[in-house]
Structure formats: structure tokens, C-alpha cells
Image (cartoon, rainbow, N blue to C red):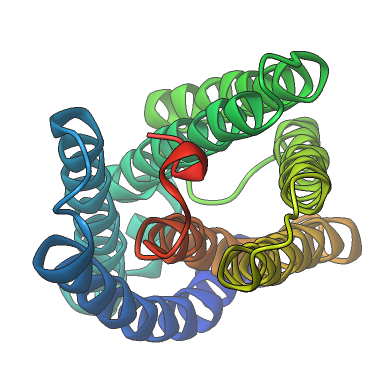
Length: 263
């Protein structure tokens, strides 16, 4: 019985703190989105504004789905832990699908930015897109299996999918950060204002990339150290919020000259 209930206990522990922290990050994302539309979007095209709105809706949906998962585990199935194990909430896998869609959209947005910064150089953008799509494919396969079985927790073979997802995301984030920083510093000029803007954007790129990489590494570490547990879900729930936050941090930086706005 203890072996059966262990996934539930781990999910309740990790999931509770993950939802609390991700709710706090969502508040920051909400502020960033409000700032973008009220202060920084005047020179942006309709497609970029729509893309930001689309991602914000998905970011909101991911929080709603993770909150619903916690509601089912804490309230609806209170006192019936076997129900949690044998009939896990549908929102658990649905949240994962939404999160992977957010990730792949933002990663390929940055691939486009690197392509524009590189003025047609395709090597780094292709590496970003390939690792991003590979991660998305593995994640979608994992979520389809979860929707079919509805069993909380995962087998050792399913762990390989999750490790592959986060490993490819680490590689993708490294490509994104290195590509942005390389091209931003490559096009430094003698204009102090432009250089200051480039330094700021490079700073955001490095810090956002480092945070996303550490989140993915934390998830992989949890899977390897506790393969039957669900501690990794805490990092996963938080990651989608951090991705959107890093995306918005780039969008609200409107101090770049027009040829580097990359819209």
C-alpha cells in the first residue's frame, strides 16, 4: 500500500509548492503583459501583439489546469488516495500539453530572433528549432500515454521520455542564449545608447537562459534520484511560467534601434 500511495504523497508535496510559486510568477507575467500593451507595444505589428496574447492565454490556462489538479487531489478525492493513483486528474496531462505548446512557441520565436540578428545565418536557428521540436514530440508522446492510462506517476520507461524532454530543452536554451549574446555583441556600435540597450538585452538573455537551464537540470536530477516519485513536476509546473516571463522580458525592452527590434 505504501508503494501505491507514494506517488500521491510526492505529488501533493511537490505540486502544492509548485502551484504556489508558479502563481507568484504568474502575477509577474500579468504585470509584464499589462506593461507591454500599455507602454511598449505601440511600434509592434499585429502578429506580435496577437502572439503575446495567445501565449498569455496559454500561460493562464496552464495555471488553471495545475490548480485544478491540486483541487482534485486535495479536495475532490480527499480521503480516497487510491482514486488519485488509479484515476489521475485529466488536467495533469492537459497541463503538460499546454506547457509544451508554450515552450515550443517561445523557443521558435527566439530561433527567429537569432535568425534575424544573424542576418540570415541558419546554423544556430536550425539547432534551436530541431531541439525544440524534438522536446515537443517527446513531451506530447508522454502526455498521450498519461491521458490513455490516467494513472498517476510514471514507469521507468516513461522516465526516459521526460529525461529526453528536459535534456533537449537544456540544449535548446544553450543555443538560444549563446546565439543571442553572440550576435548582440557582434553588432555593438559607437553609439552609447545602442550599446547600453544591447548590454541590457544580453543581460536578460543570459539570466533567463540560466534560470531555464537550472530548472530543467533540477527536474532531471529529481527523476534520476527518485525515479518513482513526482518531484520533477514541481520544476515542470514552474518552467512554463519562467519561459513566458523570459519572453515578456524581451518584448518590453523597446530601447533597441528599429533594425534590431526583430519583429
